[in-house]
Length: 573
Image 1 (cartoon, rainbow, N blue to C red):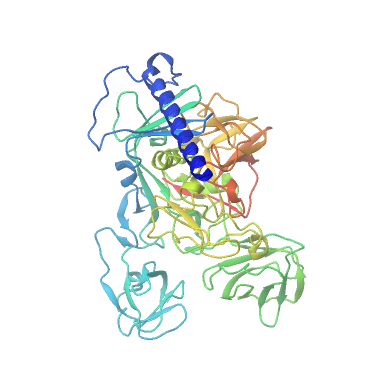
Image 2 (cartoon, rainbow, N blue to C red):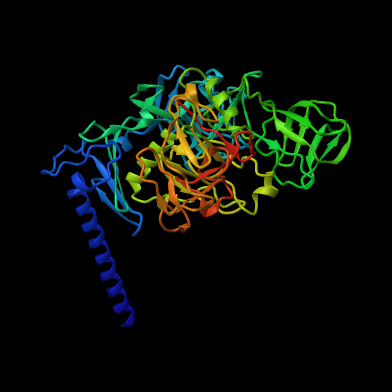
């Protein structure tokens, strides 16, 4: 009985809370013409509502930062969300084709059959793969019986394909998907159509509205004013950034093992092997015949070597090694930050340990219009997410993703990439959180893999000086310090760190106004800043960020010269 009374009282309190919230929200909109603090946007006219057809109807969400309540208007998703899709983008910025899961849109698999024999990471079907290697390599093999997929890495013969994963046993039915995800056809990107938006603020209420069309009082979102020109769409990498090695004409896997007295390696001149003495999976993501490593800090083995075989803890190389035991040294995959190219392809470990400026250079190396993820495009994705899910707490709305490796990551591979790109293929929005030390975790939002978690992502087009942010959406002027073409946002960011509680009342992006919130209330994501000098921006959080990570996580502690093995970039156009 007491429980029933308590439940009814709580229901009544919740109802009253919602009535109060709606009353405040309604008061705000009815009186917005004379009371709202408009930030360069025309107020809503105090007149009869306009009736829009469903495809043009604006969607809105209002959040009261004092009460931490939300009010949504219109359907949470709309044609803008539904039209976000993956595609293959050529280097000149044209769409080669759109993707429907693992296949080209409108092109179903034509090669199918049964696996006739079993071998590790192989698909065997006699006289089935008679086409050129390009018909298979970079495609996905689909085990129809188990609904498992694996990237095809090589054509061994007309009978055998090599796979990235071991997914087939004898008599399993298969098909070869028609999309190409390894970069041969172009970069795997996510197309975000241009949209218009309106922002209003009054007495703790932040109101955001979006529309596919230029309605009265709406402006084109700044993400789509690129390099001074209005564009119909922007493109963001489906995956965290992979590096293309121009010296060897191949996509490589990211690895940077620092000189660490707690994590040493041993060299064997008889077997030509390098073995980790403590880490359990430092070499798991490397590929024989693909990756080249550069070794420094040893007495006798400062070399650049190709890899001939790989296990989790040992690599065999094509160099003449000399015996050295328990050595603290640097081992990294070969990269050239001046000439290599940032990419978005499946099946590779993202590249890390580069400064934001390094990633800016390799992104621009892909050609005119290419860049790494910028502040305005990130803000557009955040706004689309917020309108759709009606909450700033993305970990509660969608999931934690790969954010809970706090105790395992260091001993696994010393905070290097855990997963290869492509886990989200086939899943536009999904969460998999397997737990600390277990492979296979990821999160995706509208086809964007790991917008939070796994690795921090650099954000360009924003620089902060003494807690004052400056923004730009012209990549010609991107810099780590101020430039004439950067716009000051006219605000001062809070310091030093904490969960975000309230937001600055600005229409360009989402930046905190006050901290000391909680992971389950208000924004729900963490924020940190260093208040002195020039600072650059990272987003999303990483595999060890836990509840701090999320779609609105921001780190502005880092100086421009910093590079980390848990920080990557994301290719954009």
